[in-house]
Image (cartoon, rainbow, N blue to C red):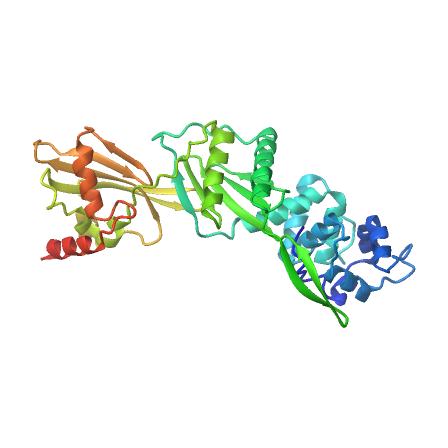
Length: 396
């Protein structure tokens, strides 16, 4: 059941702004419920609705309040804005929904009409509004260097995933009713997962009497699969949720529950933070020198922009041109030429967050990973003091 903090339907004046025949058509299926709350809806619009009484009923739900009425009120309320109205009008045009004629429709009028035509349209448009508000994600890569072709997200896959998610969230005392919405484009597939939160009880006032209201808040999590990178990024509150989503999307889309292992090992941020000093390797006797030869930045945006910079020495090239590492773009790959003491020719090493490193020889891994650890490229390494020492030495 949705939360009852209704911004628009808590004001009688807003309710009066809805055409009476539309509001009555929306409320009619719940006529028996309103009778149980000591209010009989008028038979038709010739008799005025009691807006104050309706607001009181909306704002003081009881156990007898129909869940679908509360959910409908929540969605209509959330979409009763100018932006919501515009998105709903566009959606109804795509779906072949013909709205009533006239230019006197309020945002709530439109939302109610869409609900009466097809509640799924209203629900999906509301979900889409929440999709692009998230800014903080945790990233998980496939173990494969070359990701498999994205197989699509069928209705059958969606239903199987929702059923398993229902069981999981119910086991965590957060109820059922999970919905998964998919929004694919050329480079990414964005998924919005709607689920319940733990039950809440809050004190209320109804006239002079104190009471309580019980409800289960809604929560939206976002999971995005980058088709080109083979990368899953997740916006969710709990570690257990992120682990569960990795398993679900691996299992149902790619047939492998361990597809996104979550064993984050590397970060390339030292390249941005410490520049050429991050390449210092004087403590590792097996390595004579390291040069950055390639770095890839992921800018994202509507076209999924990836910037690739290559040079025999990227840091020297940046210095000569007076440029710096971009501050905002995420570093998704770096290539190095590593001069080992046992070889005249440098050997390439490639690192990708979170857990991919490519070596020419497997035996190179031990020395390279020691360097990575010393310079802070290994996640959870306490390397700050050592990086500062290397930075000071490099600039001496």
